[in-house]
Length: 126
View (cartoon, rainbow, N blue to C red):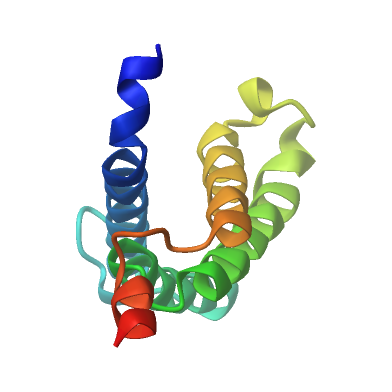
């Protein structure tokens, strides 16, 4: 499907933007109690929410995206092994699919960088 190759940069930017925005929503849920979270966060949950609330927008706009994605990937690996794996190792059993998808998607962004359509690229030009 070589005809899609010309859309690589905008597709990657959309991927990065929506992944970062959704991650930030999880952070807002944990830190501010938005979107259905009814209890006040504490400890690890609050720390995770702060990481999500900061890293998500940075990834979305592509500012320090590789570093933010690396931190976010680590947080999601931590979430999987501490929060999900004790209930069975397989993600389909322990409901850790989303944590693993986030983990490896952020690892991909960390290795690839923000891409051509990002604030990192804009500042690099200027």
